[in-house]
Length: 348
View 1 (cartoon, rainbow, N blue to C red):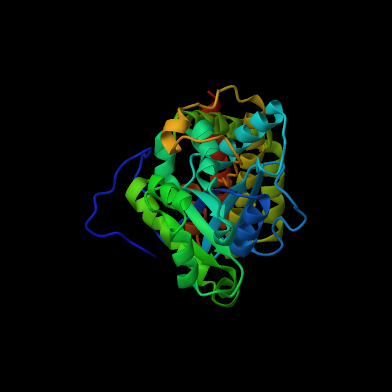
View 2: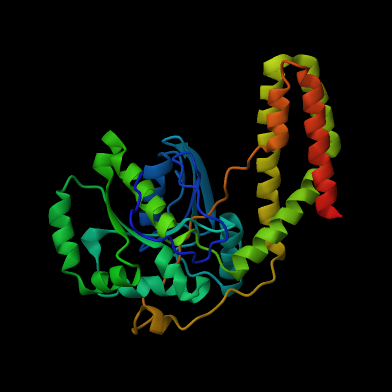
């Protein structure tokens, strides 16, 4: 994992210091010059089965998996260059993107094909600033130059750096860019590792990205999540009772943990969708022409990858595990009761 020495970590859009453990989850918003760019990078990182049936990204897609021991979430929103979506549909998908990435993405990933750069490359970044400003979002943007051919990276770098539009784009993003060779990644996984290391480095320097809209959405999601869990109390009790009849000791505690993780994941996903449907905030609009350079609004696109941290099982689960030898069933019951109590407090 990459680290940065001798630098003071800035606190842009950051409430708490980032956890840079190699086991920490990463959330990334992914967009690109085309839907294909978004899809191939997502598949390269998470596996070929992800987005297998997608030809273009026409709706916000959240994909998650465990990669190199880390929980990784990539969220792709509609690629505007490939889709002519009505404003109402586009706004709905943007709301989903915000909710799927709460409490905020660790990086906004912009995927480009280094072999097909144009003079309009700079314009492709404008929608990001337009919808997800303020300008600090550029400090959290990582340009990934994805190529599949077995070409020498140095020769590609030389060609890319000759492109004036790319040089301007890289400057606006604080020179945060990375070449990603798919052929090398298939055999070594080194490119995915380099991607994670670069994002970790950016988090160390800037923190995760957030703004007023993300914070508002996260509060709403947590409230909705507690409500959904409360509505499942009877089902949870019945399932725990069944587990107690079927298991004991360490096995029971382990099954309780797995079940709770499943319930939390389901509640979180339902809450995100529910809040996205009801969300009333207006995505901020800034002067993106000033932010990323003047020019025609050509080839406009937006694609984001967002997700959420793997839900922590919590101290109560630890108590259940710690109580295995002294009565796992009682510890499990106590854990469930505490969970319900927390839910009631949250809705009070």
